[in-house]
Image (cartoon, rainbow, N blue to C red; front, side, top):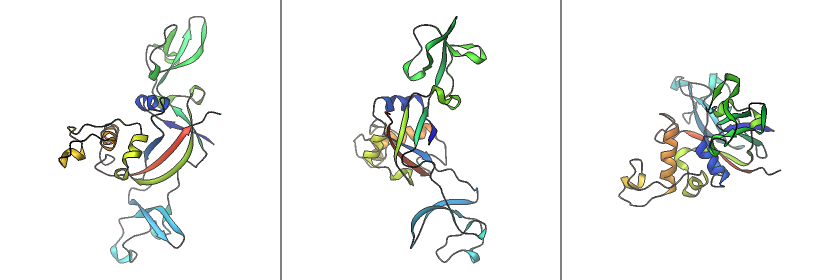
Length: 223
């Protein structure tokens, strides 16, 4: 099954250059009165929504609760191994006065075209980029195949995984650097990812909020 996935221009560049083979996406809360947590029993370990606003007297012995007093609701993964994801990226229409160009679309990561008109043709706007969220499937040129998916908290990321995210290294002088806070003068990929993440999200989804995320590893689909 083919599904869309959004990337900003910087991350599209990293994918094209084979520097990015993994992405982390916030696990969206289905209920405002529920937390995300692991639930483990004899059948295995699974991620569930746990209601957090009912009286302690009707909580389970381990302190957990259920949503509306029914079985805990398992959180379904947004993708499956083998799914094909088409990348939505910032783009523009590309045309000539007498018709369409061979390259119907152009992409921000590549820069403006050398000839013809470009922009949002439907709105009659020239020399403007169209946000990735509006990119139609037929404009997609990058397809990714999901090779693994799991859940974890954002701060569980390893140095190797941070490198797979396409993040650059952060220098020890960075205000975000965890190593700087401990007096270690060494740059690393985790702090680079830390900065990159906080540029995209606000509290409570920031690094400091340590949200649950889906960890999606992928490879380019060359079929």
